[in-house]
Image 1 (cartoon, rainbow, N blue to C red):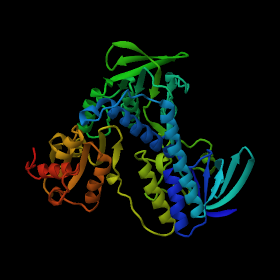
Image 2 (spheres, one colour):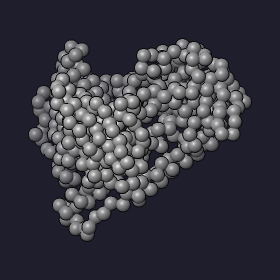
Image 3 (cartoon, rainbow, N blue to C red):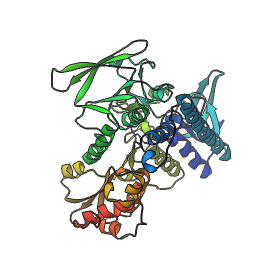
Image 4 (cartoon, rainbow, N blue to C red):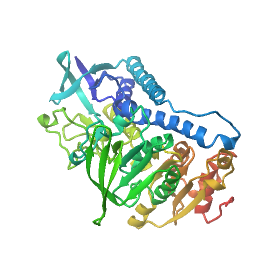
Length: 466
């Protein structure tokens, strides 16, 4: 069988790229190693983690906040098996939706491990044997896997990654999370809400080290109230695992201070690495960089003409929506169009509660680049809508160019900011100024009013409600 485009990997980048290519009139096939489509995001990442985040937040509110709202309940209990069952149902529904989209767009789906025989010949191997298909163009979208150093003794039982954490069906008494980034904090907040004692060990001197410093400070304040304990500037020197527990050895950075933490689980969340195993890239000479990422040009084409790579296997943030945009971009380039992605305007989100969202440059990046800027901040506690919902933690911060007033970065910690951030993305796409943002009429009462107020503050310290 011969195809115009063959996509290897069915995560958000792969399946969206396949759909766009099919929409543009190409004959498309997609190859997926696992039994279900959707990749990490739909099966063991974004979707299931958000299902558990919502479930745990409902429980937390029932226990901690309902009474203040005047809602009296009898004893509230956790049914972890039901929580996991609901999460699995969400995954199943979402993956079936991808199956439907493949059929709707007449995309052939092959289950098995895809590998290069030549640049235009792809082998597919599964339990039923091996077959080969021809491809005019190939898009590699095989995603990433958690980083699990040998010293951590990762065994999927007591020393786990996010993949295994999503299926714990009994609330642990104690959990150590190695890594204060997005994945560790999201899952840490899930279990802390359910009653687990959570310790976060982070090598850097702050959580969310890639985001604006103010975001990390605000979120850590909220997570400490939830009961999460933080060991910043600490490293894990080893992990020993038993049948029912594990022991995590910790050392303070630049110090001789050492101690052990015994816990039910050690969750390793120190990042992810590109997954290219089994592709046989070497046979056709595809180049990778020092971090194992596939090297690509501005069109996401590898050094082998006609072979492209997108998502977590290439440079850039490991985000599902970044992969989607790259899948669309490559499909359109193959069709002869000239699309473009502004990587500076791809938002980042942390789905804790309060949520964290950001787009554009951080204050640290502006200082480092010597770009003159001005800053405006507004706290959610000064917002009527936030007081009404009892979600008063967090703030919105707007960074604008000191001379031109163009918005350079927007950073938020607060309720529903994962959705609110899109106002900033849209305005920055059209190179709006802080004054433009401040003069837009925002409905009252809403969380979005915090954006207007922060923009007002950035234009000259004239926020109205603080």
